[in-house]
Amino acid sequence: MNNEQAKFILRAYRPNGRDAGDAVFCEALRQAQADPGLGGWLAREQAFDAAVSAKLEAMTPPPGLREAILTGGRVSTAAPRPRWGLAPWLGMAASVAVLIAIAAIYWTRSAGSTRADLDQMTQFALADPFTAHTGPHADKLGALGAWLENPANRISTGVPADLAQLKAQHCRTVSIAGHEVFEICFQRGSWYHLYLGRRSDFAVGKNAGAPAFIEQARRSAVSWADERLAYVLITSGGVEGLRHIL
Image (cartoon, rainbow, N blue to C red; front, side, top):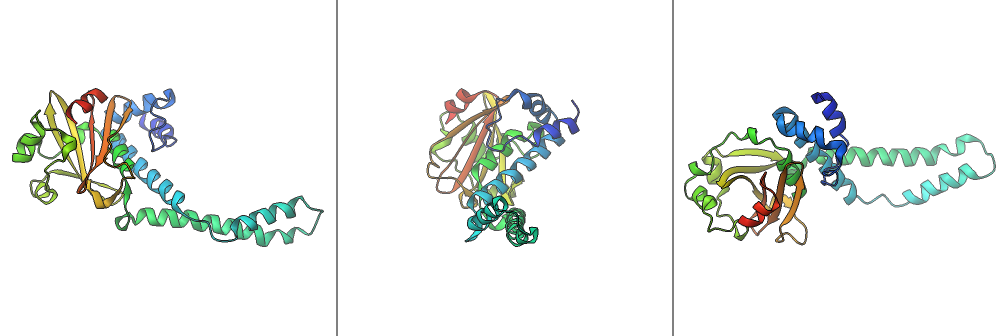
């Protein structure tokens, strides 16, 4: 399978992780993990798809749209009439549908003014190639790095991270739906990759404090949030490896 074939398959991969166990996607996902270019493409596609889905779900159809569509349906099944009578209703429905789609894409592309979903960070982390890490690892980040690599510290109690300081230390950053997210690699037996974003940038749902686990291909991830930050932690060591340090 080449990258173009993998992209063709992965364009149907849903951003909520429901297809993770589907054999149709396994080979393409493995190729995305092995190829940094393909992995980056998948992360961007997943983030965009998730943002569009979230916007469409949040939109309220304009008043009268349902009645207009139903009226058009009734007219089409009634006694034969001049076809021009359908045009206004069908034209209205089609125009509204196009406007909704255009608005969703426009708002997604302007995501810097809106909040992303924490699932977008999770899907990005799962698709982000481990080889893409370009910033200093935890052992070069002073007190924070030492805290992360200390097995006595539980990650879910709140990572004492200062994002401004991480930026000054040239920690790797990525953009998810227009929002800045920092990545830190650290070791506790296995390698872990921690993604940190500002809580205010991400919609995290009612159960934000409860860690949400997901397994996809050969990676496992857990996401959660506290009052300051939104987190995604991934490893190739399985869900138990994540539970062990949370």
